[in-house]
Image (cartoon, rainbow, N blue to C red; front, side, top):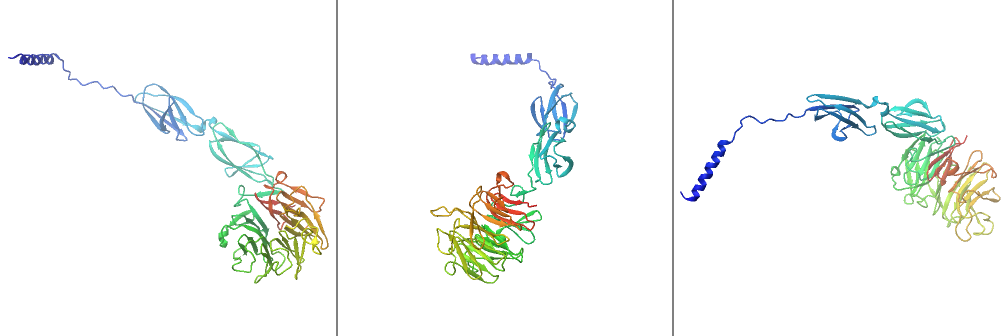
Length: 491
């Protein structure tokens, strides 16, 4: 046997020897028994996150925590708006330990709403139901969540607030109620108004208030409710309503940026320069109160519609000093007044116009000491005295603006003083009280020496800019402003 074979043979003998010496076990290996403690946790309300010893378990009530040791654990339940709830539970091997937590059995889980108003004594309505409580008071024992509370007091605008109640907290604040015994303003925030930028207002024979907006169409206010008629109803788009008037048959006439609309509440007809004798499509003012005819003022003259035909007055066929007419007014005496841009005023007596202009613009019998030549408003009181509102003219020789009166013989200039010299509108009530609308507030007077001034700061006006003004059948004054429609209650 060669040397290599001897070595291999020796290794085989050694391995066989070791195999014979090793003890071979035939019994099965021992397996460690798993821990099987179980905690079952419920809550009312359900859905609370379960934390075990400060660590999130990923489970929500009702659910079980499994494979727990025979020991005591800190359980914490968490849910939005509620206080955390912590307690100890001891797990037992091969047993189920249960716990149920009712949040609402713990008074500290409940919240409160403090109800306070200025003035006090407002009725508290909770979730739409009367509580029998009045401010100041506190609603207690509330399950965390969202609640609605209304505050109602006669003579004041009702307020509605939404509150988010959390555990063991008192929320609420002192709510200032808006006095509506004299002033009431309606806008997008507190009513059904579609927008706040309002340019026109009028009242029909049924005391329905009609409101013209800058972009949202025609608004109807009847029996305390607002409804909107979009301009698409009249086959028009992107149309502003500048002025409105109601005739003797209770038909509403609207002057818009794209023509005139006749509307009886159901049917309508649109007049434009394309389909009628209307002198211009932009209607600056409209008057239909005292005449069977409808008068409109445009930047291309005045138009008169007798329900069948049109007559147009301009510089080429009449005595008027300008074709740009800002305002038209008809009165009970049958006169028609036109107010011009840089042209003064003119009176139609049924045959011809008699113009009046500032001294700086004309001479002779028609020249008058007017405070300007740009007229925005005209109204007449019961004794025939006519009030005319002017607009300041910013150019050399331009008028100062303000008010003037005409008694059929002479002109008498007035200056409001505390408010703007820009007069946007004038109305006269049945008792000859004058209401003058300006961009800086409202002036009210019956006699010139007893003027009252109302602005945002000292009244229920939401804005000083008043574009149009009207008196309803009950004597209340309605104002179209840049911040909604304001009613001044007259008692």
